[in-house]
Structures are given as structure tokens and as C-alpha cells.
Length: 417
Image 1 (cartoon, rainbow, N blue to C red):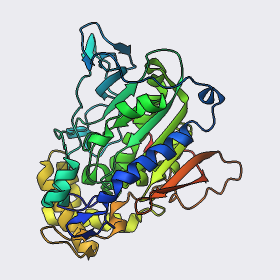
Image 2 (image 1 turned 90 degrees about the horizontal axis):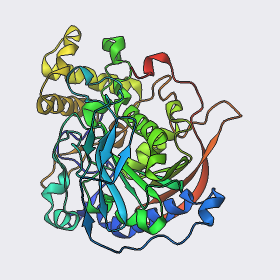
Image 3 (image 1 turned 120 degrees about the vertical axis):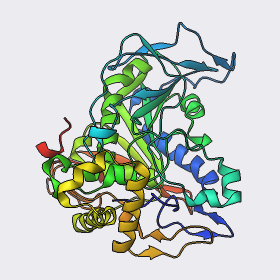
Image 4 (image 1 turned 30 degrees about the vertical axis):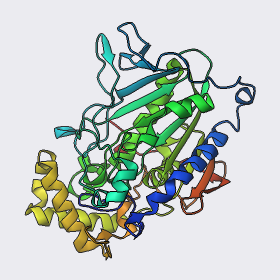
């Protein structure tokens, strides 16, 4: 269960001084992360070291025509735009809507469409409540939040590529911050992948996925159909990485050279993916910038939060099915109220609600889907490894290390339908 249904900071451990939180440090930190991630992305393939200099921005600012660029994907054809020299595709569905019967369920691939689908604008973002950053004028001025249009039909990817060819460029997959409860692939202007794609001659991918109670409610005690509800948001990311594996070659990328990277909550998700057997082989390098999430929430704590949520709603265990049609605002409010009864809160800055302590911001470990916390190694000796670069926002430094990637088999109860 997570904690951003009511105003809260981007990360539960954040603190503010003079009205600004640690996000003010990210202007310099972001450049360090990109540099570190780009270095990791290009570290292994010999071809990358021999690549010509990346393209420079030239030509018309934006080119959009009925003729393309058009790319074939497993879901159907998509038409994007050319931003100077970078081909841009936004809002491509990688999964079906998670609304209604899909709420709390494992994600499923999107049904193929006919014709050519326009992919010019960001797709819907995962629903979430207001954040504390909105209450701070200086922070809002500096970051110019763009929270998009919320919808449970939010499983979308965005792609920026220097060329629609067979060059097999390294792929960099950005996972947004906001803890496990807020944010989106478009919330900050810095998330736009055009400049990174041009600077590094890489294919940049970002995505939206389920958050907060919709992505991390531990309802396993209420029926086998909810067995993976507590990690639904992470399973969304696995499905997005599968989309990358199956489609990125058509966008000029190399599915055998994928780097996942993220900051704050995005860094936590990167760490969690490294512990998920279902993500094995879907990425090859990782960069974690702040909030590494070495420990996951316990099943016991998350189950207590779910029970408290039902109590807030006045629902019996036999009525859990009504949660799938309940308005998000009511569901989220009850989840937050239940959370505050189970998990202590940190002191809040003026104008913001108290923030539950960090453990509530993490998904819970689950046999098969994520059998151990990222900091606990696999017992198997012959396990594969992924190169990982990690850093902290307060120092903007990065260090390279080798972290074991998931190696256990996912159980059937965690398999997507």
C-alpha cells in the first residue's frame, strides 16, 4: 500500500527548508544522472564505442504529416512526429485499460487496433491525489508541474529516437519519480527525451503505470484473483519492458542493450525491478538516482493497511469486489485514512498534510512476483548480474556496482492473464 492519495512529498523521506524540498537539488543532479546512465548504457557494446557522433538539431522545428513517421508495433501501426531531427511517438498503449474489472488485476496486452493510430501527444496518466509541492509557490514556479489527464486507461509508452533504421542503438528507459504513488512520464519538462536521444544517439522510452492504492493494495487475503494486486504497478512496468523487447527494434533500438534508470521513486522502482524474476532478461543495465529502496514493505503491514481501508469504507471481506467500481477519490481517501491508523506520520511542513514514514511507500514482497527485497541476494550461485550506477541527490555523485538481478521463477498466481 502506498501513501500519496493526499498531499504528500515526492518521497516520504523528503524534508523542506525555506519552502523548498530536495527537488531543488535536482537541477544539477539530473545532469549527473543522465551522464551516469548514458555511461552505463554505452559501457558494454563495442558497437556503441564505434558509433559516429550524434546528430545535431537542425531543420524545421516540428514536422507532422499524414504520411509519417509510421512504425509497426505489436498493437498496430502508430504515427508520430519529427521534432527537428528526432522522431517522437507519445501515448502508445502497451496494455489494456485497468479500469473496472481490470482494477487490481495483472496487466494484459492491449488489443490490436486497425489502421494507423496517432501518437502525437502524451496519453492519460495514472490517477493520484494532489501533492505537497503544489502548496509551495517557489517549487511550482521552478518545476512547472504538468499532471496530465488522469485515467485508469494509463498504460502508455513514449519513444524518442534519432532514426527509424536498423542501427540498433542503446535503449534508455526512464521511470518517473513520485514514490509509488504520484507522478507521470510528463510531469516535468526534463522528462522529455528529445535532447537525450540526440545527445547520446540513443532511443529513449518513458511510460505511465498504476500508482498508489490502484497499484499496491495488498488484497491477497480476499481471494486468489487479487494475489498480485500488491504489485500491480510493478507488473505494469514489466509489461512495458516486454513491449520494449518486442518493439524497440522498429524504432532503431537494440532490445539486447536496455538500460532502466530513474530518480527518487523511479530509483526505487529500478531497484525493485532488479529483484523481480519476471523482469529477468528485459534489461541489462540500471541507474538508480536516490531512493534505492533496499527493503520492501512487509506483507503483514500492507495487509493491515488494506483491512483498515475496508473498515474506513464500512465493507466486509465479502464486499471487496465493490472496490473495483468505486470512484477513485473515495477509494484513495479511505486508503489514506487507513494508512494513517497503521503507519506513523512524519512532521509536515506548513500547508501540507503529515507524510507516513518511508516503509509505507514501498510495494510488499510476494512469493514468485518479488520473493525478496532488492538488498537480499538470491541463494542461487549461478545468477546473472546487471550493471548498476547509483547516486544520491544531495551529492549528485554516482558509483558503479554490480547487483544481482532476479533469478527465481515467477509463480503461476503472478502470471499475467
